[in-house]
Length: 289
Image (cartoon, rainbow, N blue to C red; front, side, top):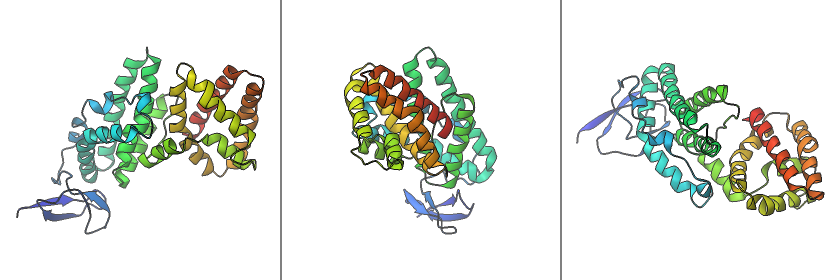
């Protein structure tokens, strides 16, 4: 049976495998995971991977009614399948050319999404969908490769994107996003209440859950705001908890945002609560993503 020469994207080792092997395998030299169906040519042409990116890599938008536990997995798998050949080719290029390949591919991703963003500027909903799609589709598809080269690519793309956009984007894996959809928690409020020594059924959490499931879910764009929160809030909580400054930050958030929100709800001013909470999310995304 005719074999193929493989080139490990981690250690650079070259080895032969049978021609009919496909799927996941480990490098015989460094024992790190890789894909057997990656391009086998050890001398990949620099820039070829970027040319393999399909239009769907940038134009696919996940709709608000798909941003949930029921539909997200199928949308993600379709997107992942579309971009996987380009990502595999990128891993080969990165193994051959290192930082030069990473910079080129990250720039191709950035340029493609910038074109979409410019086209969407007159449509706030399209801009919203673009942010959600990058965070829930592109970045998880890259990280799903589960190799250091992919992790570096995600970091490089996000560095480029966040440097020029007011609302930064976070780095999330598929499991992180699905966990957020499943739990349907008030992530930030729960973290704050935990720091303050309050239980899961405390007055603050009950009031904000009632606001979320009642008033907010019924107003125009309310569902989009809720789904955006489920996507970004777990990433914010993770960043705060690992910052070494969580205690001070959670107490600050309670004083500046959650206490005024609760006060507005007690006085039957849900619009005021909504504006305050949205301001909080914008500030925390800027600070922690």
